[in-house]
Amino acid sequence: MMKILHTGITVKDIEAAVLFYRDILGLKLVVSPTEPAEGVELSKGVGVPGARLRQAILESGDYSIELFEYQNPPAEIERPLPANNPGPGHVAFEVADIEAEYQRMKELGVEFFTEPNFIAEGPLAGWKWVYFSDPEGTTLELVEKG
Image (cartoon, rainbow, N blue to C red; front, side):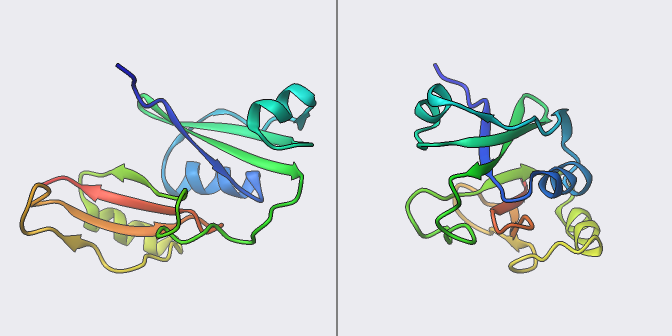
């Protein structure tokens, strides 16, 4: 059986992303932004010809977020594609009190798509959820399980 270990997120500014994921979301920084890495093997490994990148890793329990800042080649788009496109998705963070986290994060300048939503019926009945994005447009979610 496989276990999910981490999610990788490509960012334009790794220092700003670390501040958001560490200071706003409360993840623990375990690998500070690295010096740039490059080379034929790295390019092959990530499937990006001419790749030159930096990396940082933040943890939440047994789960990690890997941040990547590609210095080469330049990005093909300015912002992540909306969630209805193949490929992009979102990362959900479970919280004990979604209303409190929503208010705390709003006070820190995080812009949410809506106010927290409540699921009244179905397999997720009792859950509360709300989407927001990091400073670069990656979709994230808060979830309070009911």
